[in-house]
Amino acid sequence: MTLDHHMQRRDFLWSTGGAFGALALQHMLGAPNVESHAGHSIITHRPKAKRVVQLFMNGGVSPMDTFDYKPALKKLDGKPFDPGGGQRVESVTRSPGFKVMNSPFAFKQHGQCGQWVSEVFPHMAQRVDDMAFIMSMHSSSNVHGVASYMQNTGFALPGFPSMGAWISYGLGRLNQNLPEFVVMPDPRGLPYNNLGNFSSGFLPSQHGATVIDSGAQDPIAFLHPPSHVTDITKESESEGRSLLRRLGAMNAEDPVTQSRIQSYEGAARLQLAAPEVFDLDQESDRVKKHYGMDREVTRDFGKRCLIARRMLERDVRFIQLWSGAGGPSNNWDNHSNIHKELPWIAEQVDKPIAAFLSDLKATGLLEDTLVVWTTEFGRMPFTQGESGRDHNGGTFVTWLAGGGIRPGCHIGRSDPWAWKAEKPIWCYDLHATILHLLGVDHTQLTYPHNGLERRLTDVHGHVLKEILS
Image 1 (tube, rainbow, N blue to C red):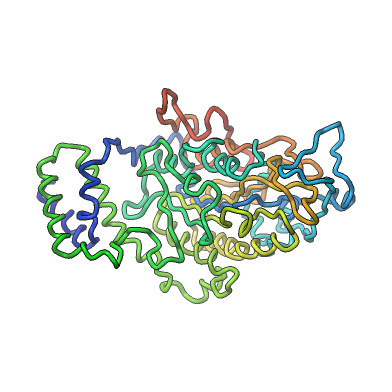
Image 2: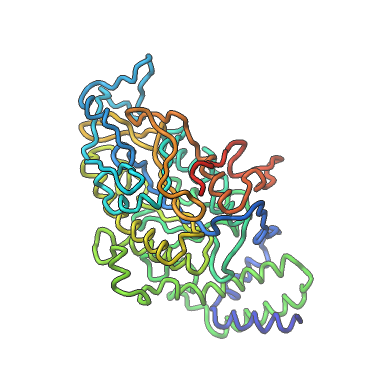
C-alpha cells in the first residue's frame, strides 16, 4: 500500500472526524517515545470470555444484609459482640459498645441453587441461577481508598495499572473504532481515589480508561471541539491536515510519527462511531422500561447498563460501571442508618442489573461476556451508632456470571456473623480467575517497571477453578 493511499484515507478521516489534526499537532511533535503494546496478545489457552463488565458498588456493600444470610445475628441482636477465643474486636471509627445488629431485611432462598438473597434485591434474586457467588472475599484494609485500589489494581498503593488497563495491554482491541477500556462513573461523582481506580499506571497511557459521562450532551469529553472555541475553523482544519500530510511524508519510516498519526486516526474513527453507540432512540420503549429507564430511581443506572450492552454488541473489551460516589453519602457506605440507606441505593441498581443479565443471556452475549459484581469490603455485624454498620475487610461477597462461569454455584464461607472469612479469597484470586477466563495465565502478563516484572496479581493469586464451567 502506497504512502499516498495512506494519506488519502487519513485525510478522509480528518475531514469527517473533526479537528484532531489542528488540536493535537503540538502534542504529536513533542510527545515522548512510548512504545505501543496494543494488540500484544499473550493468550496461553482457549478463552471462555472475550469481554468483561465489572459492576463496582462503591462504599462497601453489607454482606449480611444482601447475600450472606446469618440467622445467628437474630439470636444475638442487641447483645455485646464476642466472637470468643479472646479475639480482639476493633472498628474503624471505634464505635462504642459493639452490639450485634440483626439484619432488618427478610431473606429467602431463590432459584434451583437455593442462594439466600435479602429483600433489597428482589430482581437480582431471580437471576441467581446464572451467578457464581464468592462468599469469602477478603481485604487487608478497612479504608476505602486502599481497599478500592486493591480490588481494582491488586495493590494497596496508588500508581499501579488497573485491571482494565492490564487487559487492554495484554489483549488489545476487538473493535478498532471504539476504546478497549471504558468506565462509566456514578454521575453524582467519581469514586474514592477518583481516576486512580482506572488509570494505566506505569503501562503506556493508551491503556488507561476512556471515562464516559452518560448524562452529558457529549458523553466523551473533548471528542469534538467545544462550541465556545472559535479558533477552530474549516480553514484551520484544512491547514492542519495539510501539515500532517507533509510530516507523514517526511517521516514515513519513523515509527513514533506513524504511531502518533495512527492514534489520531483512531480518534477520528471514534468521532464517527461513538454517537451511534449513545443513541438510545434506537432502542424500543419496551427495552428502556425493562432496564428501569421509565422510573427516576433506576433511570441512570439502567441507562448505563443499556449503553454497556450496546458497547458489548460492538466488542468493547472491558467496561466498568460504578454505583456510588466517593464521600460520606450517595453510595454504599452505610454508617448512619442501614435500614434506609441500603434499600435506597440497592433499588437504583437491582432492576437494571437483572435486566442487563437477562438481556445478555437472551441475545447470546452472556456466553462469551464475563459479568463481575463486587465492592471494596463488607460491613461489621455490630452497630455503629444506633443503626449503621462500619467498614469490614474481613469478609464480603462477589458474584460472577457469563463466559466460562459455572452458574448457580457458590464457594467460600464466612463465620456465623459475617465478621471474617473462614478461608479468605483475595483480589489476586479474583483477578487471576478473570484473566484465566480471557485465556491468559496471570503469571505471564507482565511489564518491566523499576527493575521488576510487574503483574496484576503481584506475586499472589490462584485461579478459582471451583466456579469455572
